[in-house]
Amino acid sequence: MRPKEAPLDLEGVRRRDPAALDAFFERYFDRVYAVVTRLLGNRAQAEDAAQEVFFKIHRAAHTLDPSRDPGPWISAIATNVCRDHWRSAADRMARRSASIEDTPGLSERLTTGIADPERDAIMAERERLVRDAVMELREPYREVVVLREYDGLAYEEIATIVGANETAVRKRYSRALAELGRALKKKGL
Image (cartoon, rainbow, N blue to C red):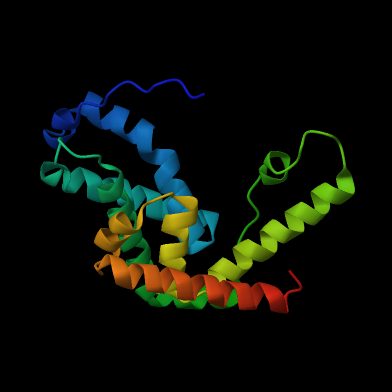
């Protein structure tokens, strides 16, 4: 069971209070970095994108509604930063030559704790194949898969972030999973 986190001073974030912004950054950096890494598939690009997300959060802090969970607002900003990145010519060039980077420590989290190098290697390879298949999805499909599966957002929250209605998001997610399943089947999974 995770210890309960102290409440954030969201009104302080709105006022751009340095201490409140620092606490906000500490609370949400890992989540933002995880989302942009999964959407972009490259840690170096994700580091730049995460910085840009927090820059945009700082600029838009006055629009934060302190009565609501800031998670979907943050995810929307992170997704939009990734969309901007996808649209850039530099990203199209980089994607032709780069592949998704391995996530350090992932294989340790996927094991039972009993040393089994063969199983660990198989699990690591499967995880890599799934990550690669997610990265090959068209961007609208990749968005909903990452936001739903990796960020744990509800369809309603995803709909707000991607600017679609909930039914459209459910259909997009279903189609994304079907496409992902076909891609993984071709890879032998």
